[in-house]
Length: 374
Image 1 (cartoon, one colour):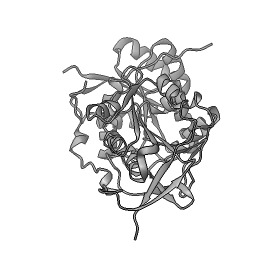
Image 2 (spheres, rainbow, N blue to C red):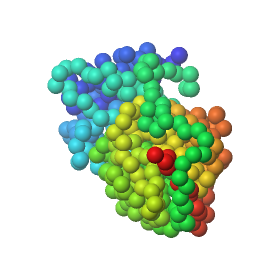
Image 3 (tube, rainbow, N blue to C red):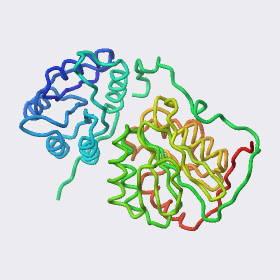
Image 4 (tube, rainbow, N blue to C red):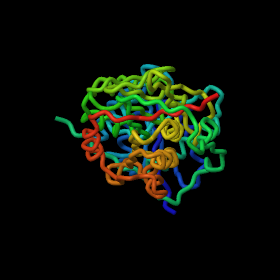
């Protein structure tokens, strides 16, 4: 099997050493080289022809964003940003994804001289996904690969929302209530941005689960709100679901749709990760299926893994319309592919086709909420 050649770009010698050690757990990733700044990285890209590049944001002589923008114009390569956990870095990381970075990973503390195994597993998984991704050139005016992380326990949505059978529960109707649910991972930030650029502000309420850490979801929501006609915000406990508004699940929390006599609202849950993710798409989709999927639309976008596939099937079985992004427009055709394999998708559409389809949903529909009686 051909190895994935990785170039690590970071001004810290400690970081370069530890990142090299982190990926050494994988037998299919080879660190082809390291660079302490973008100028050295540019020379090594020409010599080594790497498959994937990890890139720090803060470096001497040229910052990571400037280098990324030049790279995506001249010689596009799958790039994973390595970002520190700050508000400023969250905004810059969102900008990096906009410029063409495939994904990002939070930089842990290097003070102890060792990295958590969980970080190594996540980095390896992201590098493998990046090596299989589609990279777009910035314009100015293998499916059988497995990672060691598969050995870690992976919880299903059952740990957050038990699967319900039967049709027991109180039924309530809200004439203006309908829900569009979107789930995404790798490549999803730009896919969601493309969708929102084409939406009107007269659509049903939109709920989004994008795999992303806390702070980064706030920066992402602010960015989408700045380009979209619908109002977009990071969800908070008890937020109501309104037409013309979208809620993005906060990082490191699950978002669950609930109903009461006044309509629909969201609950923010700090339970276990599902499919190793918080927020989990499966949790959001299951909650919508249980409330009353017959008036909902579920959309599963680009991303590695299978989170959202089972939930999309539950939405379909509850009567919802279900859509999976097509392979051609997906950065990583993992989550949509898994949904298609199990028959969860009514339609397989490109991003532009998804926008056109959603534009037809401007007339309100009825969503029946179900809540267990005590």
